[in-house]
Image (spheres, rainbow, N blue to C red):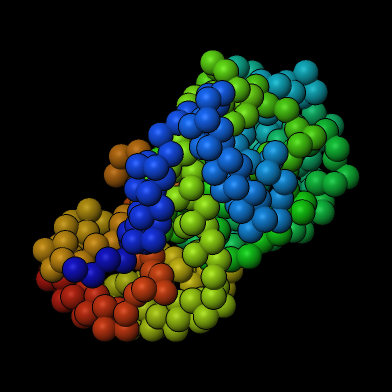
Length: 373
């Protein structure tokens, strides 16, 4: 099998799975229970939370555990909107965002909020000048992903955060789902951060919303304190411990891992450029882990299943996107319908092998020539 869909989900590391199983077997107590088993579990949970906080250079009190990035994104956007609507109802985001950003924003439109999409530069990055011109006194939230999931565009998060310092009523939310464990981005100028463990070799079902202490949110789930008043439910201790382990492993030897990814990404892009009919949607602002391209004249789903016959797995749009229509992020970048209608995504990791890239390129060329005819 050749797996080239790491941005959708990653395989679980053995060490991470072991930490989950060991915790599930040996720490049966609810961390919120007052008996000795509960206290034992609470100590372990606090230790895991501290480890996560230390790794990210934040406070333990700023960690909210969720089921993953989609919940974290919803909690950030809806939580801010419902808590601070008296300050204003203006929100700014981009057309490159994940559906778990776009859909809550569109939902808020029905409730009287105004949603604006900031223009992009040719390389896919936010137009900072345009963003500054869009900011108003009633702007309460700017939500921009550090790395777009379909295109891999890396945004100037620190620069945007610096700009927003002049707007104290406006909060800055960053979806870092595709950058944690890949790109080091300080949380200094950011108010809220979303991420999910299964994007960096952790288990599905656990993620975080990092919320700076100064901020309040209106919860989406009510029913008790849990690990925080902002998200009720029995703490998922085995998942929390496994998240801490996955994050620690993901951040180890990051430069060495990225050197490998750079090498394979260069190999991939050079190979794609040599195939007639393939359009590369990769810009200089994209991280090497994600390479988007279009197969003009062939439906992406058709190509996906043709590759699958060779045991090669890539993706069309992000796994959470609705339907099989045009890719909005690719259209926002290229302004070409044909390119946006036929786009596909390869996502690689330091586990990818040179021969896997070579085989993929060979099979892609073969199947494209066959299907295009």
